[in-house]
Figure 1: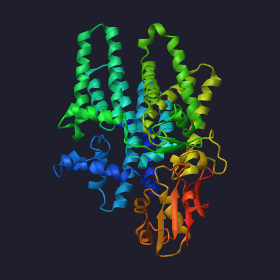
Figure 2 (figure 1 turned 120 degrees about the horizontal axis):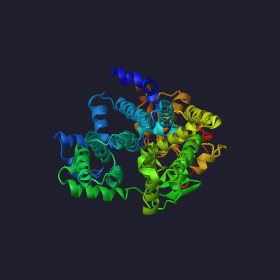
Figure 3 (figure 1 turned 180 degrees about the vertical axis):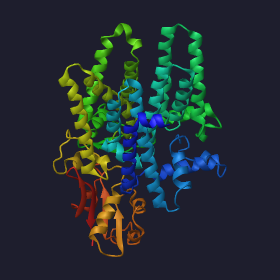
Figure 4 (figure 1 turned 45 degrees about the horizontal axis):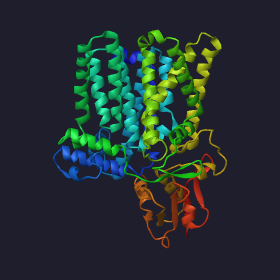
Length: 513
């Protein structure tokens, strides 16, 4: 343990700093639309496992994987306070801590991959400090835990490629299986492992060893899938197939605002995911990724005869397949996606790994000026991320890079912002700062307004009453999801107050009396 700490002391120091930041700031992040539902999903599975209830059989979302929400329910509800507001705040902290831990595994992946601490630390920071991802890590109970687990599992994937031992296959098998219990899309790693083993078979010509390896991998893989996913227990194969079918057609139809148009979730244009990725990550990240992919192609074609000996490049290609293959599948299958690219966050670790590889190849260049440019590019990318946090805190998920104009109201009129509804917490604090009354009646345009009030101090909660009658309300507060249902159309005039980021209102407030 002492040698591990000494070897990775700088990464562990970053881990500690990130945890302290989270400990200080986590109460500023609001409660999202999905959190109460995902808490219920975890609760129902927990009560089924402990024998308290068999309602799971009748639950509408029984087929959703609970690899993330079940532990979060147990830790967040059973071990923390009885106050619902404190429970959600603690759940936010736990979710972010899991994300921070996954950032450490990004570092470990690069340490194993190229034995370069600088590149590992840089990649860890790029991953952890991304404004949109960091904010989501508090209140997004599905996509970020799955992404975090994906990042951890990728480490064990490379470890199995590098070590090529039964122990590494067993470990990777379990983590890859457990990943599927977060979200069934995690199954993508199984055919990838089969492809890796086919390469090993091509090299070794040892069929018996390959069959043994697949068996050693598959057994813990199945255990990992089923261990805390009770929906599968009664009829594992049938229920798994049903869950897989349901995944292909998400139970949601809505609209997302992109380039000024309300886009229906069932009619997404082919550029939907590439566009959101390109405008919601700092520009430096896009440059690092482009360099990484170009270097990968160059290194591959210059070593075609020995391609299977390039374990680093094989691993980078695996990440390229995960990233581009997942985007291509969404385009060709015409998948239904929710707002922005959040359901595709699981490709972000692969994006960072390819980006880190680009920085590494630039850093390794024998031409001094190119080597030094790696430091410059990494530094600019990290600084721009930090600045993104500063200008959008505590609703960093509304961040867009400079490819999107920051003229007044441009983002508000053309791009989705707080589709989660977490900015209601900021809006409530805004009302409390301008209203001295001890009895404030507030009406919402829709969203988790009342849930967010749970995060307010008790003295402020007592001042607020919620109403659905506009004639009774003192204030109307709303967020904008699309142009068709903009709050201005409901009220018939511009707002009186707002909380703005990037020169566009995120949550709008109307004083009615």
